[in-house]
Length: 292
Ligand code: NAI
Image (cartoon, rainbow, N blue to C red; front, side):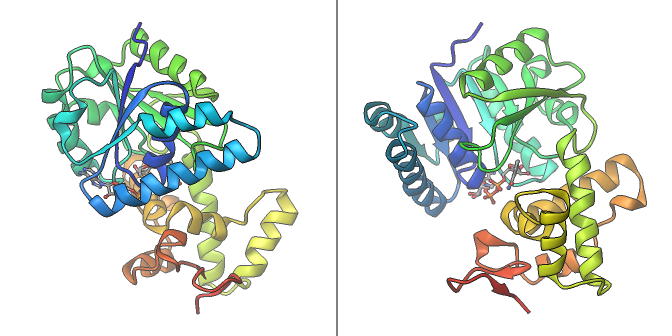
């Protein structure tokens, strides 16, 4: 079984940077790749700050923290992933773009390497068809933020081998995560249940049932969730939520998954959430305020 000496991560956004951090802290050499140099720059600062926070809270020794920061290499060149034992993809939630990347990766990385996707909802079986190694393609779905959240959902495609599943599960456990296993249907377990709730919160706002603040407070205090659904949508990214709902709608064929027009309009307006500074709420000022 692979010992994952070298881990490649593609996409240095909120998820990829967190996954790279987990891999480095667990002892792997990491190549974090993004096509955007600015994203790599931001990821470098974010990984270093996050590791520093774990050290100052006493959750990580200073020595391990320093070594982990030094283990992450930043690149825009796919060839640098040649030596990876596993590549975990965390780029934009688009089947076409992911397939294109998987086809390229398949030609570059060594024959024994596992190709994992952090996709929130896209079929692993279909991503695997872009490669000549479908038995080594698997879904490894981290929760946001990866260094903090305890769950990894593992999704087996139609052809994923037991060896690939077992090795991926071992890696997730090395990262300190608890694994749940989902069959390969749109949205898997977590987003199949979470996204309809977020979409319904948008419908409640759209149809004027209540203010955004009351919708979030109602769900936080009424159902004991740490964040309200609209606040959580801003945290995940409204663009990511919209993409997942489209996949659920197309894949499961039920109109209940059709994205709320208000969510579509926010994304059209570029209000994609916390990462943009504005979504349902505005994050530009110190206090969280209404974006309207
Ligand atoms: P993000 O927008 O923060 O980051 C995506 C990064 O990928 C960007 O830096 C972009 O430059 C890069 N990228 C896009 N296409 C690329 C390509 N062809 N080659 C190299 N780099 C490329 O997105 P985020 O939120 O990190 O999501 C990434 C993936 O993780 C998506 O599939 C999403 O569905 C999934 N995911 C997201 C969660 C969330 O809460 N945001 C939770 C779990 C999974």
